[in-house]
Image (cartoon, rainbow, N blue to C red; front, side):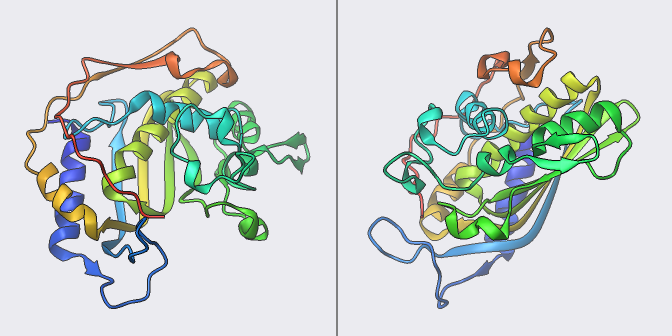
Length: 276
């Protein structure tokens, strides 16, 4: 089985067997019929993926790889907060009539800040430091800006990335305040694995570890039967990850610059309800 399958199976099983239920508590999320969307959760799940060994995509069901890459480039490369710049419709529920999600995600990465070396936005500062100050322990981004939260369509879930160089390898820690484990877990893991591959390549490093920290890892009540069915699937070997080695500028990558070869997965033909 792929290592990502192993991790997800362990996470989901742990939540189902040992998780805390918020049944009886007042919760914010709702299903589309207005019913409270309750969860069973575990606090502070931490998973490590060695990207030099295997790309962390699950095979228990299909992860929409190209759409996931398109979204991470929408945030980190286009630095957009408008769904008209995004190919998928995953953000439609949080956008206004103009397509904007407010001062969230890409917007936060686009804001320039003053440094001794000049003005940089958060992404360009990471790229600069990896080339000029690779041993710095200050190479990170954070889009959870309390000053702008009231103007965001959705508070950031994956909100902070810390980059760290060890020898010739670039590692990263992704911090996430909350995660819908069925819908979004492997989606986010794949996105930031791709991002780490891209940034390592243009910065002259080999790819190292991605560490994923989730403060509130949860399964929604209406997802529990689907999760139990998913856990019965037969895991398959991981595919091979390929990246266009000719790209030397982060802003030249496209979603077609990366691909999964021989990606085989189990069919999972269920419509998964999403709580908002």
